[in-house]
Image 1 (tube, rainbow, N blue to C red):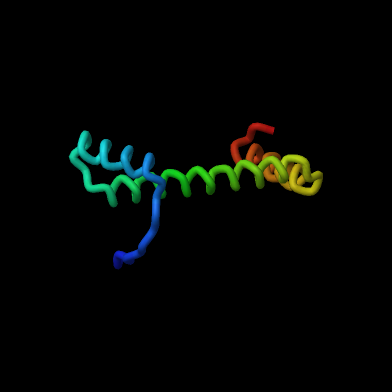
Image 2 (image 1 turned 90 degrees about the vertical axis):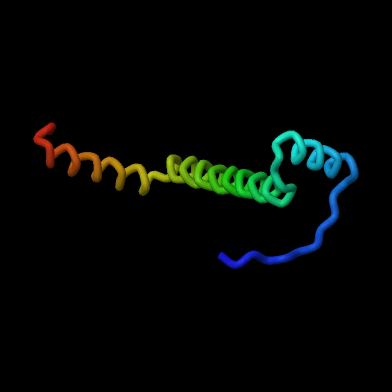
Amino acid sequence: MKPVTYTSTLPDDLWDLLESYAGKLKMPKNRILENALRNYLGNLKRAEYIRSFRKAAGDEDMLSMAEEGMEDYLKMFGEE
């Protein structure tokens, strides 16, 4: 993966925290920012999945398809 250079600004208090933790962890600031951004974006993706599953749970067609699928699954194992 090719790195991309970008320019950004941060509030002073956030920059101070970043510098402090970079020193404590002996880790470059860009690595901390990368990890934080990956975690944040991962949380956003999980929230999207949760919303879509909740929406699907209220959909009668989706519920019917899931029930039919479960019946087929149980038949495969002789559970029905």
